[in-house]
Length: 447
Ligand SMILES: Cc1cc2nc3c(=O)[nH]c(=O)nc-3n(C[C@H](O)[C@H](O)[C@H](O)COP(=O)(O)OP(=O)(O)OC[C@H]3O[C@@H](n4cnc5c(N)ncnc54)[C@H](O)[C@@H]3O)c2cc1C
Image 1 (cartoon, rainbow, N blue to C red):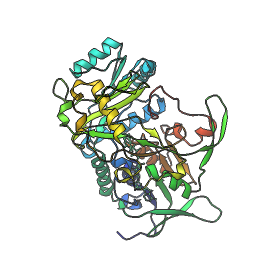
Image 2 (cartoon, rainbow, N blue to C red):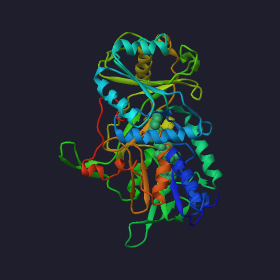
Image 3 (tube, protein in one colour):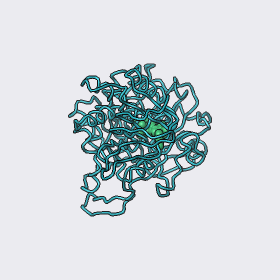
């Protein structure tokens, strides 16, 4: 495709957020008789689904300790359910299985899910939780579990296939997707902060509005927009912290056990819900019985034909260097520095065996190879959805993002002038105002 010299809306990034925004904006423009997909250009430096959306586990859940996250996720699940076939979405449900220390948090989540009409079961008590799990998997053996939250909606989707599904929907509306084109900078008119053009390695494109969904590369686009790399934050006690780094990187650890996905069918022969287990029981190696950890740990897993095995992950680790020093490219499996190692395989397969007997002799099937990926996180580990430089809509999802297919719909509304109350708790100003999202007892930074 030849580079256009001018287009009304430019979207940077052909991942879940960029393409969901493109598709929704195109349909909304048409519905309002204000244009259509031809007014929109998506630019990606690489290809469709070449970022975090293309390596994500693909789990879709509502289980969040933060009320604003739950409401937003319920909205996104509606979008997933609107076309499961196109999105390669598997609505198998999701289970959060927890120890005593998390019980009250999870009980609150259940109550609030009821309040917003999101269907789930809550099982409370050690014996009751064990029996509930045994009723689904007859080899369940995890000890020290005192609650189970069973979400009846949600599940998972196949990462690259769903992003191609969104690309197709966008292109059907007339959206153009320009791949292999890197954004290098932005232009604004003298005296105004608004962006008037996007500079790429192939030339400059004038525009009226920009939407940004660049996942782990947000640090770079943020710098190109001259936004602050250090910010002021008010903590929950009212103390101000100045010069706080805006971005940090975490590495998300995931892998695949190369067994028949049907190994994980339920007692009645169905595909199971996605399983997430957090535990404060000591975790011992399934290989040599040595102690792996006696701190709280967590894993998630699901049978997945797309990955050809049992796929899942464990808690991520924080990359121990300033964000500006982190090498994001080459990304994901192509990275030499940020890929999982033997430690992850050992921990995750031991934890699978801790949960279900069927995995006790399966650690040898762990698929060697590069998996996992970097994520760019905000100071409180929750998203920023906001408008900067007057006409730039940034989607910085802090790695909750694959499941948030509905955010692009809300951002499209905002681009067209309708503010979204669901996005309000995620504005950039919350840091200086001290309106941070509450922190749970979970071992994951994003729960
Ligand atoms: C291993 C892993 C597992 C995950 N699992 C889950 C999960 O199960 N559920 C969940 O909800 N979330 C999950 N996440 C988080 C989720 O993947 C991300 O939050 C989400 O995919 C981000 O989507 P995005 O569209 O913003 O960015 P991306 O999918 O990363 O897409 C960004 C695109 O921008 C392009 N780009 C970057 N810079 C430029 C530039 N200068 N010019 C042009 N193009 C550019 C890139 O090439 C890329 O294609 C996971 C993340 C990782 C790493």
